[in-house]
Image 1 (cartoon, rainbow over the protein chains, first blue to last red):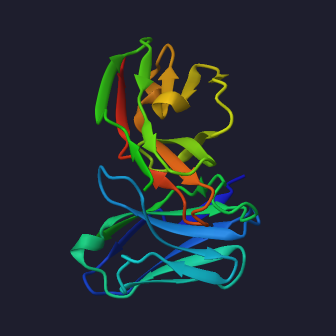
Image 2: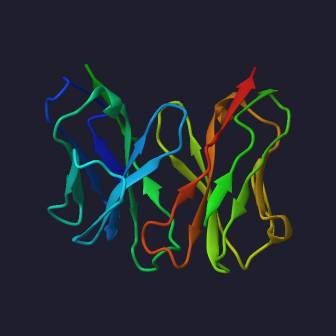
Length: 115
Length: 116
């Protein structure tokens, strides 16, 4: 019954070694979001896709990239993880029918550890 | 500019006590939504409620209730007869009609600890 699925739940990577986090959804929502949440902080939006239209937040580092091959899947690629990238990464979706006034539904998150 | 303030960083209560989590927001938009999310230790953000700016009616759902007051720009959340399972971080968030699809602005969260 899971609607927004994130794999893996925990990911360990080495400093500088590329890593990919995945998100899938069964809601058929148009919009998918990636957030970064560091300890004791609020989630911070990295970017989102409205269908195939990619929207990057102005302060998202170039080290973070995303792909959305189809409606159901979205990937977060961290090209060269640094120690400061250790965080919880949350994927969310929304319907995309009413811009700015929609509920976002979150997945369980992937906790990334960088050694 | 839009902003959400949750002044309470951490709250501890004993089980069965009532507790209110405060949320104050700022927006220039007349059409907006307010949200509460719960984040238990497992990490998932669980959607609790959405309230639009034209509906100031308070809402009750079981032990949860929400008090929306536009006059004070507040959207407070009360848990009645708290339980240990209510222990989590609670986020208040704001979404404006004219901010496109990147609208969700979160407060910093309130960590609630319910002690048995």
